[in-house]
Length: 122
Image (cartoon, rainbow, N blue to C red):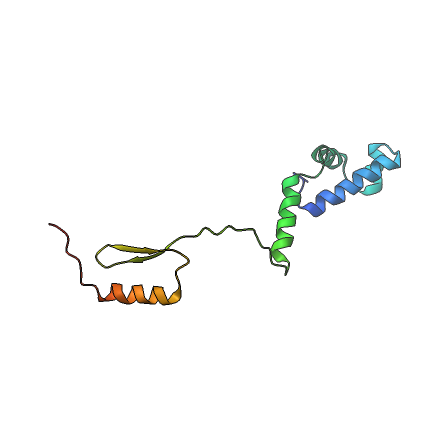
C-alpha cells in the first residue's frame, strides 16, 4: 500500500486501531485478520504513531479549520505615532505632529500650495 497517508483522519483512525490492538490481547496476525489489514501496514503505522500524531499535521488542520470558520481572528497590533508629512514638488518636506488639528492641516496645505517653486544653488 505504500507510505501511510498524511491526513489527520487517517492518523486518528490508525491511532484508534492500535489502541484496540493493545486492549484486545490478540497477537498481531490475528488482530490484522480481524481488522482486514496487512501486518506490514500495521507495523508501518505502529512506527509512524510511536511518538503520536505529528504536531505539524494537527496544527495544519487547526489552521485550516480556523481559516474556514466564519469567526474573524484579530491579531494585536501596535500603532506608532508618525508625523504628517507633505512632500513639496521641489523636494522639500513639511512635517507636522500627528496631533495637528484639521484646521491647521488645511491652513498649512493652503500655504504650501501658494509657495513659489524654490530654486536651490546651482
